[in-house]
Image: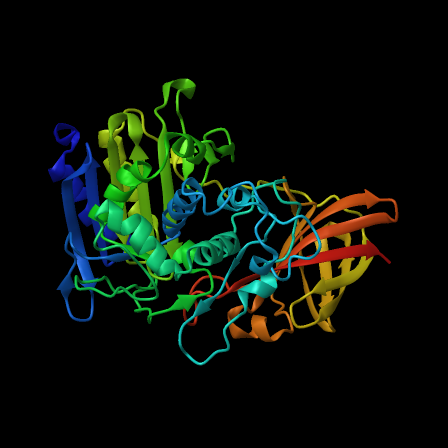
Length: 457
């Protein structure tokens, strides 16, 4: 494997990626046959002090935490501590309602019926958002893919309940320790003793240590070497049947599916090898881990910037050297939802958003030429709406939801609505999301999804 790796070219690619995308540092590792065969780091782990990044520097890995948590869940299932196909206990989803609750398998696949959510605690005195109040039923479990940090929050709580230990200890004792991954950790900060990279905004401002209510989805740390080894060694913790279940992915598009905590591509179709991967992002984090089992190969690329462009440039070049015919579309989860013209006729729709603290009255007026007028509890904004493959109406508006949670760090509102006909008449149903666009004026904001239902009026 090392004969395929052009280290001089990799050096040049990493230096160019950092300069082009204004990224402080990148760390890369390649593992083959169960051992690290190459590790390197470029740039600064701490720009203020001038501390250089090293192969032993730990980075926040963002959503690459998910396959770590998934491995612990699958190991607990193999040990008989939980059933992947049993609905999770009601205590894990106190606001889900009287509906059938999702199973662990559905949550691992992001098909638990929960909405998109993230919320950060920067230690600045702002009241933390209660994630449980957003873990409500957006759709029937199993009916569709929705990337849901809240599902991995529920899985983390399930692990704590069946083991009697905090989630961080479960991952340490059941995953990191048995695999010999000394740098791996779950928590708001890396405890050492090795160095950790400072996390930076896309324009170079340092992030404070931050926490969140979905640690099993987000708060992992690792060196690139340990992350590459994790991807290669994790199946050794599971039975062959469970390893096969991990790779049994439901499709996201023609190239990629999502299994139990991993994105899955290839595996015999069109001659492509089986490729397991997961990306990670967030405040000051850009991570990716990839495994190619038939080559006994895995790679990890870690950066300490919110902008993931440097990560992707390095990853594309590195895997292009090592995996014949590699394309980034094998590992990048699609977010494509092509726009189309709004076809809903002009009219007035009214209804409510059941926000956690209270219900909000909503009035939507659809006007000519795609113009809309939205009022939420008397607050008003105008804008232009379109449609897409997934939505009959899609819009983003400068309208803060009048709730305590949205006031924390979510100044904008997006709408995604589908039209349907019920025995009671026409409906527009979907999601209203309070959010912040990027890091302007501070750090990443919160992303709070609410169900919404409107009827013609």
